[in-house]
Length: 404
Ligand SMILES: NC(=O)c1ccc[n+]([C@@H]2O[C@H](COP(=O)([O-])OP(=O)(O)OC[C@H]3O[C@@H](n4cnc5c(N)ncnc54)[C@H](O)[C@@H]3O)[C@@H](O)[C@H]2O)c1
Image (cartoon, rainbow, N blue to C red):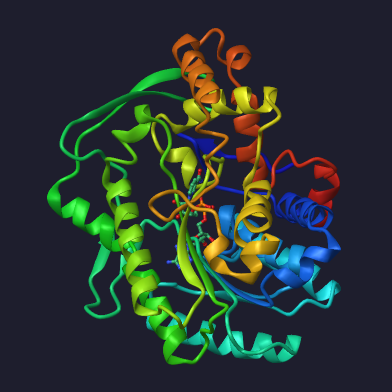
């Protein structure tokens, strides 16, 4: 039986059957959550950049299986080679394509570097093709930009930039937990240099989102119905040192700058662009940020007890059904509920005062001896394993091995 190989909250292998089964569960959730009368309100053609795992995959699943949209997704995944398994997203993509085909949904899945001009051109062609297959106008109704990437090669200069997760100004110290052993330790990270900060903004900021919009505009793929989205996180003050006020937070501030610029540039030509502040979930990207595993384990305990818990799919279903495509918002994007800065807030339940207060109290109380009882580290670990296809309900892993 394939066993997960996890060290320092990074998992280096995955289980294909489990990835497929987890994806089928996501699809089943979308199909049961979106009511038939909601179908006409949603997108007919959606582009998801970063659509193979996490929030991007959930965005694609809900667009396709919730609203019946034709979808084009671009992601950067490794296919299996020799005895080495591929990355989870590669199996998710395959399973998505099979499920979409079985339901007669037009779906094109591309693999490539989203930052390159070539990938943008390929995606534009795929959108035309998907629209033709689905018999819908060749314009993007929904564009979700959901990348989490460690590197970006600037297509104009050829320079390769690397992103880092570091504080700015002062050293950051916080408690973190090893999800396999439950051992709590203090993690310290030295501040980023000015160059590291600038490079992280280059990778995870909004410049590439703007380039995507320009390419879609150039190809005539935008319309007054186009809604463009990118995702961000704010979180509790105790994480700001490493997140919001750190290098990633600066990049996310640049994403908000880009959002405003897109709205300015395409005013009247698209319905609008929004940054959606999503809640903390367990994805491959989030497990490596110091403090986040302990915080999320405590948060899950509190949100599950209050029946407020959501995973990526539940968050995106709420984003579409209760923000982007409510009856009123579907008619006029001006009716999309936002905060004073124009951001969509899906972290409203996470940031509720009672939820935060109890979460922070649990973080204080957690020790090596009581971490599995005080917090939902088991739930965190389970979600992390599932993201790699392990421990997925209904999968007989012995059988899966025989079939491989
Ligand atoms: N995970 C969280 O708790 C959380 C919370 C709020 C917001 N967000 C935001 O959501 C977005 C997605 O994060 P996630 O946690 O779902 O990450 P993830 O690691 O699950 O997904 C990242 C996606 O980006 C793709 N990708 C990476 N580099 C690429 C490249 N060069 N070209 C094409 N595709 C590439 C991957 O293939 C994958 O599809 C990020 O902007 C993140 O900041 C995450």
